[in-house]
Every structure is written in C-alpha cells, then in structure tokens.
Amino acid sequence: MDGRTVDFEAAYNSHWVPLFRYVDRMVGDPDLAADVAQESFVRLLDQAIPDDEVRRWLFTVATNLVRDDARMTARRRRLLAQQHEQSELTSEPLEAPDRSVVRSERIAAVRAALAQLPERDRQMLLMREEGFRYAEIAKAVEVAPGSVGTLLARALARFVEVLDPRIAEDEARRGG
Image (tube, rainbow, N blue to C red):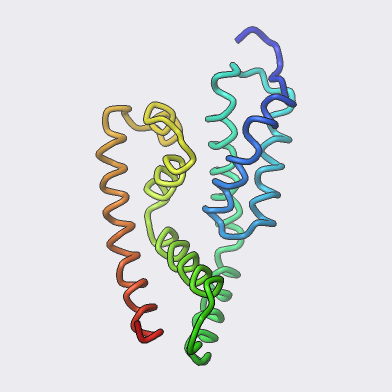
C-alpha cells in the first residue's frame, strides 16, 4: 500500500446504493441497512486500501456489522418473529389481495428463506445478486475462486428448497 487514503466521495458515489441494497436484503430493515451502510463508510474514512479493493472491503465490513448486530439482538428478533407468526395465524386471509400485499408476502417468504440459510450461502447469493464477480465473492467469503460456482449452485438449491414450501403454503392459504 502506498499510504494514501481512499477517495471517499468517489467510493460513496460508486458503492452506497449497492451496499445499502445488499444490507437491506440481508436484514430486511431499511433503517438498519442505512445505519450499517453508513457505519461501513465511516470506517472507510482514513483507510489506506487500494481502490480496486474498496468495494469488497465495504461489503465485508457491512457483513461483519450485520453479524455483530445479529448477535446482540438475536433474542429480540426471536421474540419479534414469534409475535409475527402469532399475528399471521390469527389474521384472516384477504379475499382479493392487491399486488402490494402479494408482493409483501413474497418478500417476507424470500427473507424468511434467506434467514434459514447458512450465513455463507446467504452472503454469496446476495453478493451475486449485487453483481459481484466470482473472484470477489471468493475473497469475501474466503473460499477458492474455482469453488464459487459450485457453492453458489448449492446455496441456490438450498434456497429454493426452503422457499418453495413457503410459496406453496401462501398459495394454498390464498386459495390459489
């Protein structure tokens, strides 16, 4: 490294939206996603890392921040999930749901399915969705670049396996 700091403004302009979207997909909470993305950029200040490593560095820091937050709030999330499941059981299905309701249900099903995956699978799928190359994913999750395709295929298969029953349940509940 040459000791120079990162061009923060350029990094922010290039990486804020994809980083926020990545974290939002991980946590399902836009406010928390914004906080994590912001904290990632705060930590980027005064870093002396190569420009071609900034993206991976930011996403790795954000992933670690999410992991740390999850550890601190695991009990609260578990209680909220139980409360959410209880309210779903007591609510009556809508006769003719509009598109936003259907979309919300599908988003909830996808997030729930992602939450059931191992952390590495979830991280790899979300990074791929954000357009990361296999080499970048390999560095971020610390695996051999040649194994990323296989690991992604397995992660996707596990995701589909978890997601399909949820969608089938939703369709049955709606009478479709």
